[in-house]
Length: 515
Image (cartoon, rainbow, N blue to C red; front, side, top):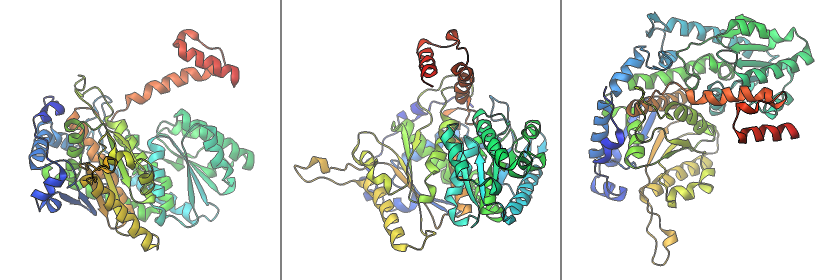
């Protein structure tokens, strides 16, 4: 597929009029600019697009090979070209009767074998009255996914078992988890594909030492399990490889919550709810795989994002869940989107023209309204927003929930349509015309959470295709890690002034004097 510069391709597309006019001139807009997938209702009528813009965007998707690259991913081709790997997270949630072939092997039976192993173990832990605390030790995708989903699915958790998540290498993180843990009733899940991730292994060794001090060396086998593919290192740590849960090189970390990386989540919500979680993913996968581009929910959302970035010049995107359970969802999407599409080199090795990957951020409502919404409404920067809400809450305080959702709808309306100020009061002017999408579902369930994650996964894929980048590598993460490994021994041993710039040498010297 020939390279296409989206910014140039969209430069001549007429910019729509104000949303007030678009709605006034088209009584059908609110009904037409809605797409449904599985249990999700996605209302994008308040985005700054019209039929002309959408036609141009769909044409752009066709010209950049969105269909072809989507089909290549589902076919198990090595679409991660820089690492020469397939990208097959969709196989993680496939039913038993499905078939996904990677390098000549149908991986679905392997996936279900691991899921079965996880289910047996999770049921055993949930039935063991001695275990009341699970500590998940991982970083990046090995933490963000499970911790986000654990918080999101609070209503489905086991009444006895609670989970803690340790990711950062700062001592306070592991110290807090250990201070709150009775060694005899705690299970540690160490999640590292290679079992060599420095942050994860540092925390795991600290947890191991604390356990051994309390219960002796023999307790390690009973209280530690691993999510990894490196049996040798797992065994060296003292973990029984029967309690090792593997995954595959075609699963990227930020796409792995529905793999063995979700073991702590499965323990918390149970295998049945976890299967519902997977089914939610799969329903969106099937829609993405089969629906025509013009009515394909992830494609539409991706195209709106491309338009906001390349057509309207927005550099950022706010994700605003009106559900406290989704407090960590924006952070999860930060990694999913920014690690995937924060690239400046195209698949063919040429530089990107224009911008890729919005800066993703957000907080749950209504707290955000009393923090950064001022900028959203009256600031000079246009920040497209995704609102997420649910018709029913899991608590019984209906008045509270009605007020919460009223705020969601009000903020979406105010951003879109604004309000004209009275003469002499320009500070009360709300210009409106701020693009936003509203995503609704009846209730936050395991299935719905899976649907939301899959929706945004495929949005990222489509946008990466249009921008011509590899959404499935993360070389930008590597350099900092390499330098940290070089600097660490210099903080306590002999520094090497020739290895760094003058500013870094000065920082190292200051730290050595004051540590």
